[in-house]
Image 1 (spheres, one colour):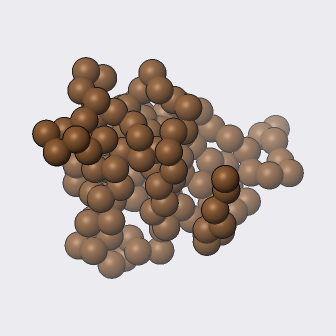
Image 2 (cartoon, rainbow, N blue to C red):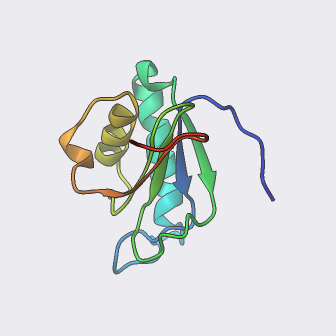
Length: 123
């Protein structure tokens, strides 16, 4: 079932992703995606300038061969799916910085796919 969310810039976190390639859950039985979502929200609390990007959770983005997967999207812009992050504050900050169109080192090597916005393809 789909749930409507704000249509602005957003990071969609796979809440069921593994903690790492080798570890499914942490000691409290929390998945890596849920931990990463918490880290993203904590980064926004630490830096209110990052609050303009929504953080949403969704079970399974179907990138199960990866861990800690996110989709970064915004209306009228190319979207990206990235993965293999640590579920920590450093990764969260890099993801949010990238959502603001910066290119932090923390996202390099994490890209899985890019998706055109509805009604467009890349020429």
